[in-house]
Image (cartoon, rainbow, N blue to C red; front, side, top):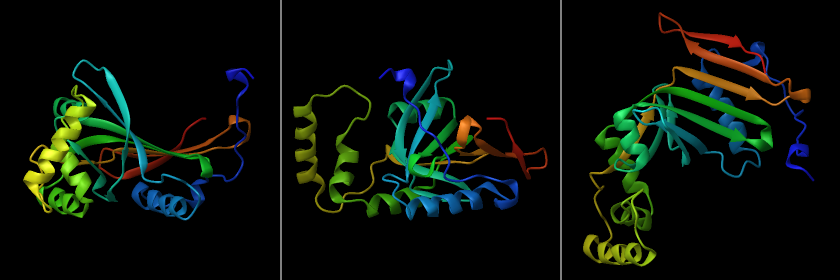
Length: 210
């Protein structure tokens, strides 16, 4: 079979203006709860797209760890490629894809670090191996398999069972200024509803063409 012949017919649901919430965070919560209750394997997985000062983009999968009307939260190494790009250009986009529900959610907006207490609390909730890993990994930099294993072993002995959060590791919050909800439909006539802030800061809902 040719790659060009691979296609999927989307027909499970439709997305109508009359059935959505008045703000995107409430609508996201509805869809997220449905994803949690369905057979979606990784409902918190999202593509994070960043760009450097020259406009060169990069993208990777990260995990959503919290959301509320302030924004969407994820955690990482501040010295990683994404951390350095966010420091230079604090704008980003998120993409959730839930194929089992034939849905996507696209989120765009400015990004800022979460507070130190928030990062501390989340770090303390992680398994010990992940906490040690945050110290051991010089994320996005060259390293051998053996060197990483040695760093993990050394730091496990040095830091013990209750390591503090590394200063180079913590959370970011993306504050949404534009959120698109995409529902797959037959004949590629997909439903696309977009929430965007107007000049007064209120949410305005529009349908855009598939």
